[in-house]
Length: 497
Picture 1 (spheres, one colour):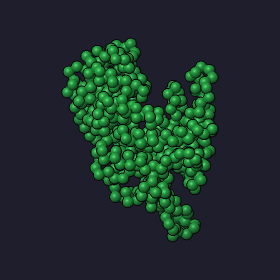
Picture 2: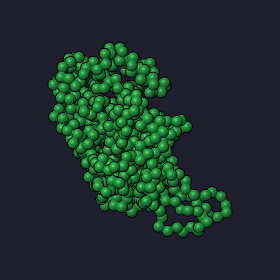
Picture 3: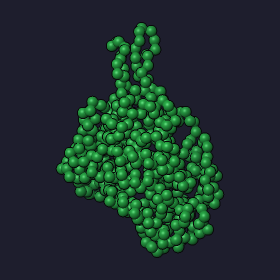
Picture 4: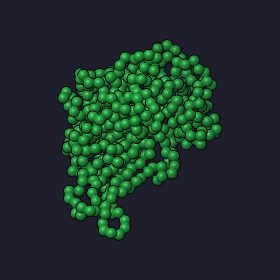
């Protein structure tokens, strides 16, 4: 680790403490922060659930989760003894006003420390839990609440949730988390743009032809089909992850790197997005749903097959999209005429999250035809799985016999360049909550502006008679997704390769 920034003693209470998010991400992240010496002595970690578990039972369950989700080299006995001593389980139905005495007792003598309430629950529980926290008297001036995405299903429900939570917590106490903003490469995007004189002068429509943002998953919905069928890819990925990435790419330089300056600039991007409604929905968006196929050489079922399996019979035919492509446009001076192609889906050929900055070609080639094609420069920002940055340049092919051109990459791989383990997204964001730093979290007006832009697309799909277009698992989505970008004379980055 390059640097460990100390934090003050704190308590964290995880509602949904036996759920998938807590066991797969939150508790392993807290363990690794303890492993690196960032959690001070006396800090407490409470898991809240309706399960009839003793604290010892809960600790055993956490240990099994750590063994499944962490490298064995990180799971040392010394850290485990220290970490497990911080853990307690509280049995509680957080939607009911009674039964909070156990949590109140566990939090006693901690009113002067940071107190984090992490709501790893369904969004419709955010309001009731916050009201009950206030009634129980555990909301202190240094308390913070973390809300997992998605915040609602549409603009109306997002506003209602924000109103309910806002009656208990001030806006500066509310941390709406999008773990993509905690990824090392996403933050490095700001360093790339604003700490290097090379890129920012070129970061305009004069030099950039178009931008692609892709978040591709090989997995299906698995055991999340109940949630996913009520959500879909547009709500689950575009409204938060992809739009936040678009904001960081497109925003103007903030005055300083602080909570309000950065989020003010992101909000301006969301407000500048050209609305997609009515007839534009069919032209500028594509929705798809995977059918059975093969991913990584393994046969996988279709989305409807997974719904049928969970229902143990024939589930109703689903119109939920598992794949989305959108052509977005930012209407301001910097980005006029530059399309942003957003793409996300499940059961795609590879797991990959990338931002592609495609520069314009040189206006005139001075090289003879036999020298080869002059390919436009391209900046590839890889968010996962191999975090890094690649700049594709034109170079001379070494050797005698005349000048021949070929593209060659300048590659910055974080794993190769920085040969240390650095905190993952949840590790970093959890410590930002403890410190009270909301810079990498979404503000209320951001969430509502994103829903305002996405909602007309949802309404357009609902009014239309077409179902999501079928695509075979293991491919890059329906053919209409290729047609959308090729109508503009462009191609997807993976196809170009």
